[in-house]
Image 1 (tube, rainbow, N blue to C red):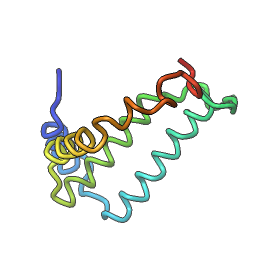
Image 2 (image 1 turned 120 degrees about the vertical axis):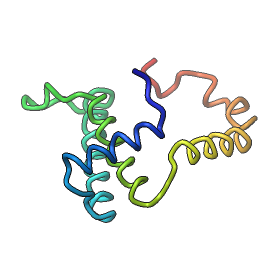
Image 3 (image 1 turned 135 degrees about the horizontal axis):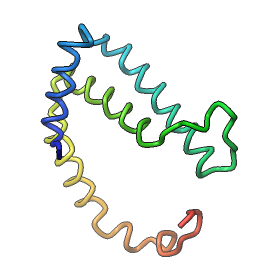
Length: 117
């Protein structure tokens, strides 16, 4: 099943209201978001960077960590009255207008230097 951001926000809110009891405070959720981003960074450093996985880190799941970040971000959006779908569309329009020619003219992006692809 495909989900819109609007549907995701409703799913998270329904989950919070029925299973999660209530939202953590915005400050607590911001701290949790930073923690989740740190967990993603750990996997990225080991999978794509120079660090190696520790024995107890073999089962870490990159997609699961990204989904955890999305969940907490949606919690924060719900708590602060942000319509993520509208905000995302606005952000894409801004980036498209601002960066219309910026990246196509960047010689650093015309090569695969610094990437694993």
